[in-house]
Image (cartoon, rainbow, N blue to C red; front, side, top):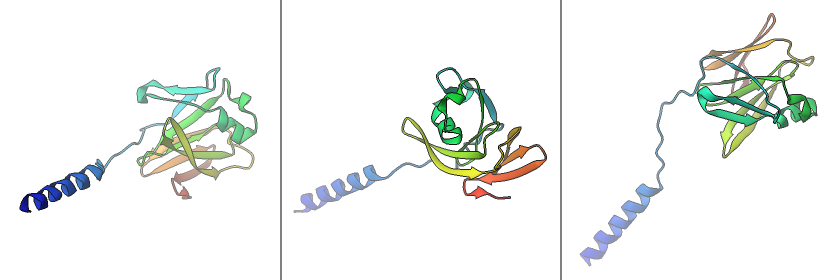
Length: 148
């Protein structure tokens, strides 16, 4: 009887420890500077330094209702401390917030910045926030929205 109790205890212990997740914290995913990446003829942007590549044609479909506008354009992208990606570009009205997903990126939020479109956007890391500069206008963003 005692053997059975010990056996059940060991089984429960093994099952409970195998179900727990290992989390490494704290972590800082921030890219120190934004990347300005030209979109190739297939709609991809790639940053070898971060082993990063993604197709952005659907982003242009969302922003301009025409995915063909993506070819040859540039995307501005930066990653914050929490791992969120911020994407925008010239003539974009919005900044798009993404998180990595299995085999892609999931849109988390869209921040309307300018009804007329950004003219010369630049993003900087101002941890824990992202600074967006467009001419003389400065916006502070984070994963919750426009801070100011």
